[in-house]
Length: 441
Length: 103
Image (tube, rainbow over all chains, first blue to last red; front, side, top):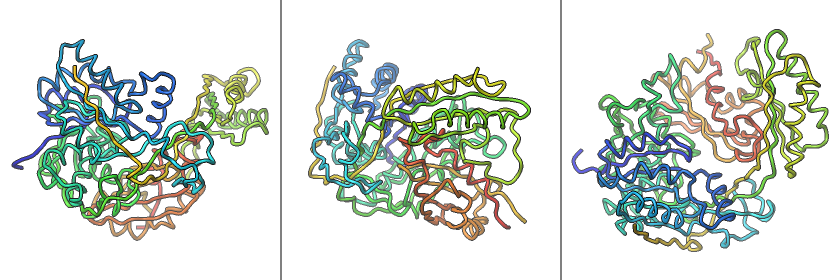
């Protein structure tokens, strides 16, 4: 491929491993490094931290990731595009600038804000999942619109070394640098769609290179402990070749790419982002060399008129407890223990869930015929309450099984966690006002 | 003769709210028509009885040898508020591959 731009993906979720990004930035000969670190719940949790302290609310791993990356991106001229700004991109940019000064590195960080639309929502507006009005879920504490390329372009045009965003559509983290580099027009739906495919294939990082894929003996993946993350070489029409740094673990082939292409896509003929309505049905994936594939053939139509918004609300507390049983008759003892706890907590929880791990916790039952007799099982009971102390009672009752339950219960554990619910709605584009602020070390 | 989907195809599960999205991909392109005939939305809904409580829709992607299933009301009320161990339904791909079809 003649003129191409190379984008690597160094993180596919908030807690992703740090090393693969360092390898990409150091040896990947990248033009851009994208770091996708912001889930729906992650941004809501970040908003809670910001409410607690106005200097926080950016990604909790921001400094750790950047400490290793800054010298490498400076040395190799790699520009970073990341949503690690989370609920507070400006504070995140200041944190990066402070870190750069400490390391003696001169750089510029462009912070994109405007995705926080909590004040722009109409309480009467319907939620996409339930059709109920927003006001029916009580007080919302976060609302973030998915911004796209249009909002990100000014940040790239500023020439900043790092573009730090809050909520943007994940594929836009790759599409925006492509549109910037090649000067693609916002209404060029075909190229926007092809660039969106690039972003979608990259956005989960290791999920393209054998992560979430390996199945020993069936779908073997070499060197998984040192799983390498992917990069794409993209031409001016949006056709792309994907590979990974030589010597890293993992694999890229037609199967890993097909799984990732379809991952979380509810309609392959109409994948909606702020940038385009992308049609994946004509996508062709070809293996052209070891750990190398080419991808082409996505089509595009006009972008949606409205932006999707994720709203966060307090959904009470989850209480959980677990205890294990082993050997002969273990299943019956675990089931008896579950019945005992359910009876002791009867009437106190709207929903109480009793699972036997090792038998029925994932799929309610073994999914193929046959009599399963596990050697050991683990009872798990979980329930939700608006009251933290009430939620904690579940774990307390599990622990009480030690001396008040069936024989041989061991390894009791309990936890109580605040639960953040996420729902979504739509917002007209004109109600969103993106803004870029540049910080310099 | 019955065969498990595990022998013929690989799968990945994704989630959106209370919806599970299951990709079923033939190892060999030649097996795609068989999967298309046997793994209908109705058959999938029967296999996932008690798990997928809402409607099941299916998209066909012959060029990729893949079927894409969207199962509604499948994740305990929604990923963020589910009480399930596997709130995202990530393991449902393995549940799908346990399905047996006539060949």
